[in-house]
Image (cartoon, rainbow, N blue to C red; front, side, top):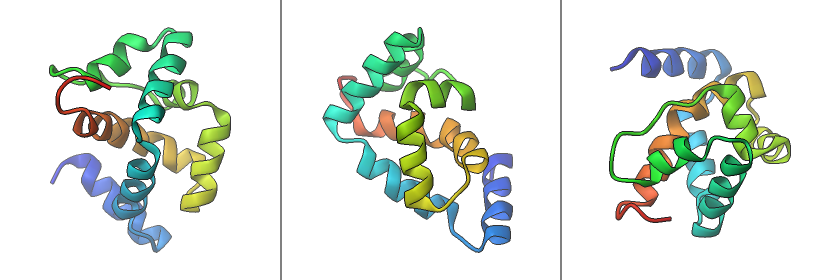
Length: 113
């Protein structure tokens, strides 16, 4: 178990929720092909296109910060995820730095959005 997984487990226990399950459900619902294209477009606007394209491509996924996740998704999408998961943004954004690149990578196994 990674340090992050251990931390997520502790936070999940403290909040009485399963973060992995809640985030996994919401991210999978979010990542339809048109949403991946939208994420790429927003990332390009924010100057973060190379990072998101690394998640789509077949190589290593470049890391991203919580602030960059907010720039990529936009405040309205972050607030929608907060509403759907019941998790505060301070918990959600750091978790998304781990889950979103992996989820995009899995949704684009051929290296194309």
